[in-house]
Image 1 (cartoon, rainbow, N blue to C red):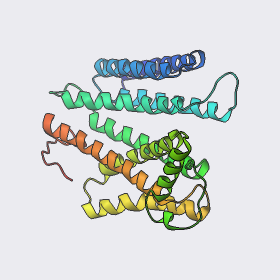
Image 2: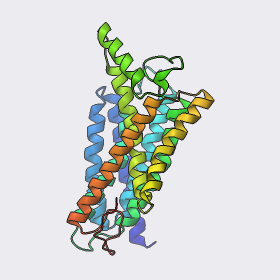
Image 3: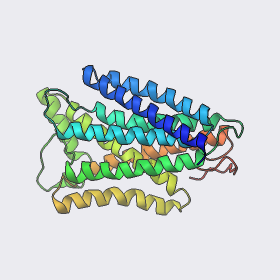
Image 4: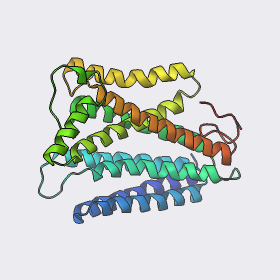
Length: 289
C-alpha cells in the first residue's frame, strides 16, 4: 500500500467517524429521529461521492460503508440492551440507520458504475462482491435474532392445531376480520407482515446474485427450502412459531428481492451492455433467468 492509499484510507475513517458522531448527537438531542435518518442519507451521499471522485476507486466506499455499519450497529445494540433508559430511547429508526449506512453507498456506486462510460473508476466488481458478502454476514445475524433469539410473532396468540396450519393466510384473515369487527387498529398485523417481507427481500436478492448460474429448478428448490427450514426449526424447538403464513410472506419478500435484482440487471444490460455481476472488462449481453 503506497503513501497516497494510506492517506486516503485514514481520511475515509476520519470522515466516517465524524459522520457517525454527528448521527449519534442528532439522535440524542433531537427527539424526531427521522431527522437523523435524513442526515444519514445526505451525509452518506456526499461522502460516497467525495471518496469516489478523490480516489477514482470503489474500495474506499467499501471502507466507509463497513465502518459506518459496524459502528451504527454497535450503537444500536448498546441502546437496545440498556433499555428502558430515560436519557436515550431505542426505536425502529436505529434499524434504518444501520441499513442506510450500507444501502446508500451501495446504490450510489452501482449508479456510478452503470453510468460510467470509460475506465475512469476502478474496482466496482470487487466492491460489489465485498458489499454483498458483508451484508450477508450481518443478515445471517439478523435471521438468528429475529427467528431464534427474540422471534417476531403475529399480534394474535398461538392457535390450536387445525386447518390454519396448512391453509395460507387463514389465521391472518380470521384475525383481520375479528379486528375490523371490533374496530381495533390493523397496524400491528400490517407491521408484522411488512417486517417479514423485508426480512425475505435480501434472501431473494442475494440468492439470485450467487445462484444465477445454477439451473432454474435448483434455484427454485433453494428458494422454497431455506424458509421452510427456518419455520421447521422454529416448530421443533418451540422458539417463535413455525407457520404457513410466515413461510408465504417470507417467500413474497424473496420474490421482491428477485425482481429488484432483475430490474438492476436489465438496467445494466440496457445502459452498460453487461450484467450487473459481470466486470466491465467482460461484456455479456445475455440476461439469464
